[in-house]
Image (cartoon, rainbow, N blue to C red):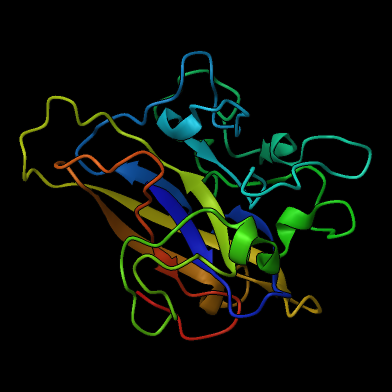
Length: 232
């Protein structure tokens, strides 16, 4: 399941995903299932061609087009890190997202920051048209998302994979995801869920147990973006 924040304009910038004391972040499989990481892989994005089986978190920093490097030739989607509350970000095969006890919950961000001159992945408009190979599987009214359409201005939060090999067809598996974001509206005005509830999200997402989606298919969560109506 690929999870996105739907931004309202191509100039919107998202710099981090996090929790605050008044709104503690969490990402939990409700049935207790573990997330699946590729052997030897952590929650950091990977460059592997078969990365579809790998759970990872990201702040838009992933290979979705031909421009995959930062200034100086460094791979953008490898410049990710968990915040100090994310205690197992670098743990291979972690299976869960663990947070420091008593903290505001695990968060993550690009180590290079949300500077579009060095990190084009921070800008929502980077993901438009031919640069964005991801397609929506579901029509989401109010967010201008149509099934089969390109996820224009959609900024990726992460990929969450579970093993459905032995799950009975029709069984419902879901995940609850709660987090806040920070960034810039239209690339200018700073916005943050630390002080503004419009940039906080609480969603329950359902994994399909059968049939299994074809490679490259995505399950889309069309969250409210930096501009527009918030969805709950």
